[in-house]
Image (cartoon, rainbow, N blue to C red; front, side, top):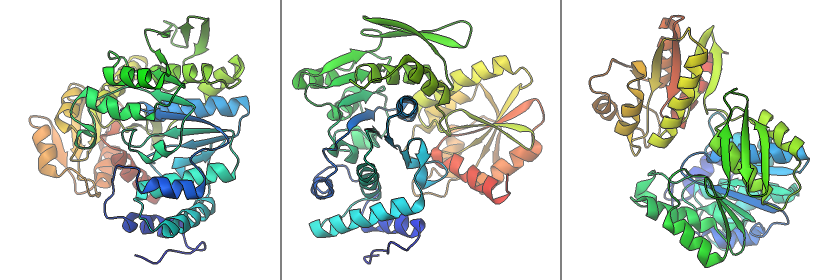
Length: 428
């Protein structure tokens, strides 16, 4: 489709248009993007910019950052990806998803700039630039930006951050970012700029590539377990953050403490005015769909978690074990499960198989979906049931589980999205 939709066309029409403009879905590199971003005048916003990269935890970290900033009264633009239920989830103003027309109006401007430059944009590039256009038009005080893939060559990196956050480094997207921790760390470190604070929240040893980039940029590094420390309390309600100049007690919240602590430290060194009360209220209010999201559906307990690599699934299991300790009625886990073919399916299954009693599997309906043979191979020896779709797998789980069981929907954002579509259709 070469003819652009109109401002009066639907959001879905525009999203379909962007999915066909460029030849590939993922095309790392900023050569095409920078001229368009400069024409849109979004590369140097009149706002404080906090950019978050990392293998896992970006969503929780950016959500916490935005929630605290909203509690403080700043006008906040939050950009995250991917979405789970609706595309609008990717772009929020003051914690509220933007409406369709706001996105469409931004798409019109992005497409006009693209055509004037004589360049194409991938779906991700176009939609990210649209978010920046919205934040600029809305005159946001702070932009909180989640990097999509890597860092150095990701479209988010066309904007110079005032604070760079790297949550952790794990082996994911190895086809694009490299097959070692150091190669991936080099890509993530690409968001670091001269003289800015850099927060590293990963629990592995600080990769040399990050230290090298910090040294090159004469940036100011704050690394967990070196420059700041956190410890949760045995009461299950509070935790303590300690830095060389501060020790403070804060509520636990619902998201991962390692990411909450990373966000708080990022704000403390950002130069923004943040009160203790805003931090407390922000942590309490921060919620993220699809991250250990517990719902009651037809009186059955369902947990949605988008963990799709070993690090993410290990954290899911930690949360699940804590939940089961406080909810003794649930003795067995029934998993509604599917993954993408380019993920480490065998390692994910190896982590989950001691916990999951029954696997209900089905292929996803997206281009990178793992086929049933791949899923079967990873689940060899497990109790498996096959379905033609994730929706059918979930429906059977919902109808068959007893009160001692709970349903875990996991393996991919796309797995969660399929179940959500099913629930929408049955009006749950």
